Amino acid sequence: ALISLRQMLDHAAEFGYGVPAFNVNNLEQMRAIMLAADKTDSPVIVQASAGARKYAGAPFLRHLILAAVEEFPHIPVVMHQDHGTSLAVCQRSIQLGFSSVMMDGSLGEDGKTPMDYAYNVEVTRRVVEIAHACGVSVEGELGCLGSLETGEAGEEDGIGADCKLSHDQMLTDPEEAAQFVRETQVDALAIACGTSHGAYKFSRPPTDDILAIDRIKAIHERIPDTHLVMHGSSSVPQDWLEIINEYGGAIPETYGVPVEQIQQGIKYGVRKVNIDTDLRLASTGAIRRYLAKHPAEFDPRKYLQESVKAMADICVARYQAFGCAGQG
Ligand code: G3H
Ligand code: 13P
Ligand code: ZN
Image (cartoon, rainbow, N blue to C red):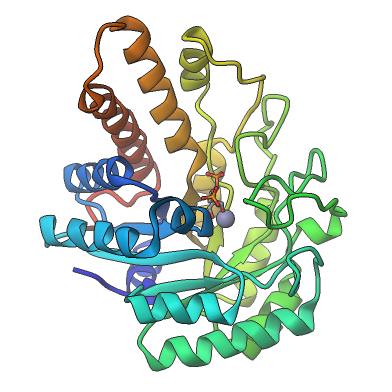
């Protein structure tokens, strides 16, 4: 059944687990996520980005998610809009039947101006007003995602792609977070704690203090009733990088967020863990390997099936690691 983000994360908070939120763009990702959730008895958050809407079209995404709910009626599903950039975008998603929207006002009205607090509060507050009237949950964002190693904002489909961030901007301030939540009434808050979007988070193997866990803890203590969201949570599996490169790919050395660090975050209030890149890597690796090994094969179902399997394995591992398995 389709439920709101607030409903799902209230349960996660009560029982102390985190829910991976996977980005969905196509049928294969959708099936992989549902098969994994079914196998592990986990609740599901699927999210559609602006890039996904551009690729598949909003109606296709909507029906893809509704089809999943129809095929797996026993699994609770949140249909979430990822990184909305305006009130209009969020309004449209609410109209389409999304049960949760993210209003990301963290980079200002033009998407390039970090720390425009007044704008962020105002636009997020207005989204909450409309969304809550419709029973839809809202995720806001305060602080700017960026790699503490490089100061790069990372890739987010145009959003903030070319902005350089200071160390301070890359860690959400607990006091400001409390004020933001009070003024906007968001259900969930995406915080900056050292992660960034995309495959290129860290250029060296991450140390076990690469995330600002103390900061997460401090924010959670200030706003215990607001569910914290960790964006840029892909772990960039080294085994899939190797497979991609073994079968014709050329991805340079790069590292993601260790799963153990995410588990630490969950211990201190992170309830929604956004993952996109890991499924992209697994899908690409599986397809490259299959096509290299079966050069005469041309039925797309053959290699797409490999992609589904590879992505489902990642989903299963995350459901288990985040304590989500058995909670569906
Ligand atoms: O937040 C970023 C997600 O990974 C979505 O990426 O805009 O390329 O679909 P995308
Ligand atoms: P990754 O690029 O680390 O998968 O993060 C995805 C994300 O945060 C989507 O909002
Ligand atoms: Zn994100």
